[in-house]
Image 1 (cartoon, rainbow over the protein chains, first blue to last red):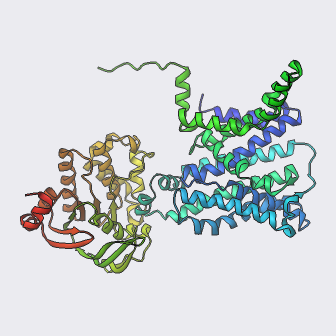
Image 2: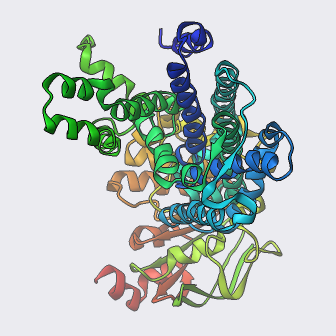
Image 3: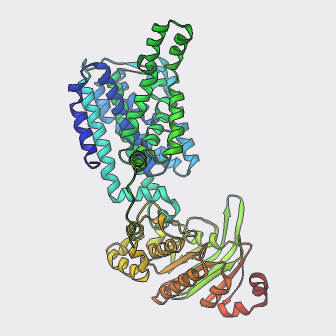
Length: 336
Length: 234
């Protein structure tokens, strides 16, 4: 059963546009799939290679701006930007990784944090190139959401399957050995600098691609949105942690949960508060309805605390534990 | 075969090794003894290029090692069995062993070497599908040694292999090290277990405060009044 679960999910995702006919649900699914890609990108460098990164926004933003600037500055189709965005992000990851992989653990994490913030400021200040806080507005190619849906689905499948394949090859073993013990890996003849760079570049590539896809889909970006520390970088980490750090399908599960939770709060518990406010006509409920939509960060916080306390390996990593809690385990016969 | 020539090593601004010189000859068991913080581990970490000396040079069969990156060292036939095992805990026993044979001639001979390691440590064969982190302390040490052997080394450096093991397991591990040396592998052993290691070794160096203070054949050092007083409390 468990073996077929990804396949069943895949089929459901492929036929989804037939079921979810309204744009709202299609939009939500596009967001979920985007988070699958970003989460997978974070997972390969942080989960599998052990180099915790707060830099998802850097690559996401650079990818988005690449697509945007292709249209805005060069007058080309932003789809050209989508094609090269992954490579542009790798061009950023190279010098960045080369310098910062001298650092380990929390110090590396801090540098990635700085990278995202620096790029956000550059995008804000360099108005002649990026338009500054005004952002970039382009005309979307399609009115319907279905083409975008299938594009992001393809990217999500590509990244998840890609990571699964990579983790089964010798690269994957090298990544894991770096996560487990960098010195031991180095002593056994693994060029840790090289393989960390490789991992970072894979991560940057797919994160950049999805950033560009975000641009062509949404049609509007500004530095605050795409280089956002809490909405992109931290969210990527949460997707990874909730789903399961270092697991292949963790980011998939994490993306569904995090986007779902975000939407749950944003809509005031799916309209519950609005309805309550209308029914009771109480001022207090109306005020609460206003604030609860901004409380998704609080919800994230609580969720992360719960996950770290009870499921330290995430939902996918601790799947056996979750199942065990609901189905009493049959005791094994004691062999005598 | 290995020559360490007058190295000075710093951690940041703090100097931990002063003018350390030593030599490992073919087929011998060389022991580096000394108290905590004497610089034994630092010395072998420097040989593995995990640290760089500020002064002096390290050569192995004529090749200079101290300018090479750490991941190239194993290619020369030097393997470092680090302190505290440092296994890949989320990989199986077999995968850990495979990680030991990534290089040059070790790779095509992987299966043969693995059979040899399993012969040396039948326990590992029983547990080959188990995760490295779930082994007992003794088994983990065996796995660390097995992983080192997988690279077909000419020189094996052990950093405190007796750490945290029961006396009987310590005997066991030392027996294995002796056996490995009889197969023609030179051994550089760092230990605090002075009494036993001095008995089994060919030669020994005594370190104190980052300097080599004495050298000589093991049994001779064991009789030395200063060593007795400092390490054995006699």
